Image 1 (cartoon, rainbow, N blue to C red):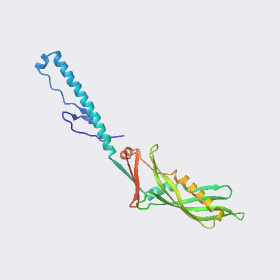
Image 2 (cartoon, one colour):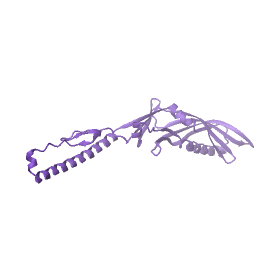
Image 3 (cartoon, rainbow, N blue to C red):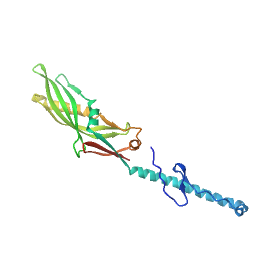
Image 4 (cartoon, rainbow, N blue to C red):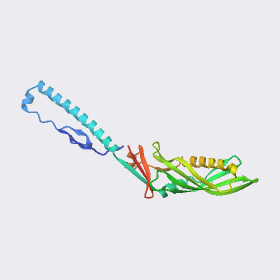
Length: 231
């Protein structure tokens, strides 16, 4: 972590090279002080000790100020629909088989960022292959899901979080399978979306590297996902 140099004027002290606290140069001893012998040297040692203590205190104070300033900073990451879309395209299609009764496939994700929302909306194509009358019959439809955002500090990545299936519309599902198909679809969407990273902080970006610790919030504004981070 890199801190900006912080310099606070303190009476009698200044900041030397690299932001280190420096004491003012000692005055050249006079002839009279040299003639005072051991007593004068003892007094000089006391001044030196006081200078060292004051210098150490300045370093501590400077460190505290640096941390406080860093805590007051926020860093913003902006993601477009296209950037999120690119990540999700790599994760679909996904398919789940339920015994020998049916198989459900979710494909062709379409990201939608809705103004003022703290959720990412996602449209999906749903294809249900089901046994009807002893024959495999494909049924087509649509699904709509949404998800929040989670930050994982172990790999500096943002993942879709708490995904849920809002709706599934497939025409021709036998009544006795409707609830089961909905359940399988919800599980499939959750499993796939919950493991999808949409952005990773770049290690060579100073501001983003500094801001890796805490996700403060996110919201959709002007067609972009605005992510705010800080300490």
